[in-house]
Length: 621
Image (cartoon, rainbow, N blue to C red; front, side):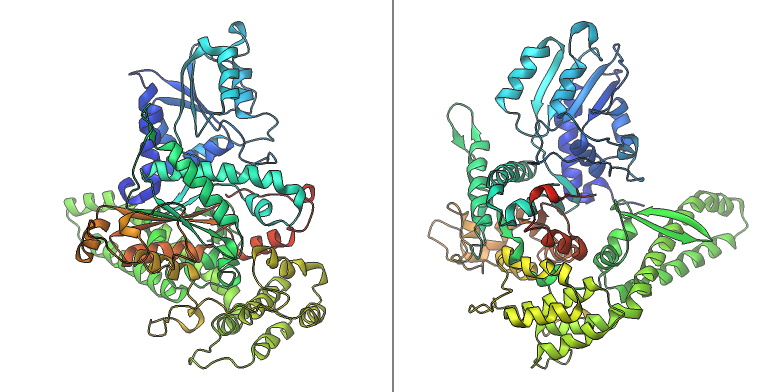
């Protein structure tokens, strides 16, 4: 049985807001409507509801707004669209074919030539040519006055509603969101000065989107950012703070909603390069790194047949095991299969009519459970088939380089000695060797040009050398060695870990320190006066509650919202859940421009010094 909607966190919050602001707003008893979606709203709805949910709201057909459609003049149409493109370069998308989510299965988006608003205006070009009886328009976020006036001048008599609902992000998981703007990585980190206008535009768009995340959560958080080495986080934080202030102005008195007991932390991607290239052995991160999973769809063979399964939160077994180490997963799934099998046999052994009736009722449930377990067992075994021949030995070297100590806790005296066996192993592909070289460079905080040239030539990766060199555009020391010391890490030597999974993503330190008020206010400054609970120093004024009541404040629903410019990893997503579980009085919501995997990131890094017309951007699936 899938988790109830109330347990799916952010997804549930988003669906309830859409239901209240869109469907309840235009719903009439017994009236059916056609719904028109663009690529962003298709993805948004697919992330938080099913087609059956839309049917329950009086939606009979879901259509792609870009497609030529036959008129249905006896029916009203509900347009749920983005007012403007979020991309400096308009992107095309044919990716929305996730089979489990019936909404996106109904709509396959062709190449986009017009904006969503253009398509709407085309549908109501003149009274005699109107495609529908009337229109209800709901924009995901702010609609510029110029566009609004254009709509008003063209077809105001056909419009029953025109509203902004302020949800301009994708709730990817119960505690994870994305803005679905992977091109932000290029615009924020490319050194090309001709991209300045594109960067400004995308920073403005991201700020607007982040404000809709806060608004959906009903939070006006204190905004803070990582101050060095780049200024992207600072600029974005200032924009978000300004837009939050504008958003929470109330009526003509311009009263501003006070800061809530939550904080929003904005970070540049270069804050933790190690976690982006390290082989992670927890189930979800490992699967997305090693296997060709597209659109969250895992393809596998069983009984000689090709099958597909969707890795999603409606699968309670996936939610239960996705953050566990692969060794634990491989032990747990067979145990669960045996339990179900023994339960089934116990039921089958009873021959009474009532027992048979119970068995008939339970059979679909048994089948569904076993199918899920077979899927995840196949997934785990496919991961291990990639892991055992090559990755296992690689992981030991990676962990030693990342931590600077071996499994026994002894300091690594010569990182090059750890790296060389990896580079000499012919079974490792170039991506794995590049990942190892990067970990070596990160471990010594940068290297010399001579040393880097030698490494690149020996491994024969001249054509891929920008996957290494271009990290400098993220503020990560590559050449020459940095004179600044690396940031100190928490001592986790007493924590129980697997030998090949000793590294802890940096984000976990940041989350824990933020919750415990231990972040340095110089390194992590606020854009404005922060809420008393999150004053950063732990000091309490006479007007504030004493420290003993600190956790009581947090139980009122404090949230720690994280935004990483340029992508987050699956291991960092896992940390958000782990810290929330350990600090039950504070929920961590983590998000980014998109979700990245090591290969995807290296490909993006390689393109940073290329002209933008040579770069293609792939949307989140």
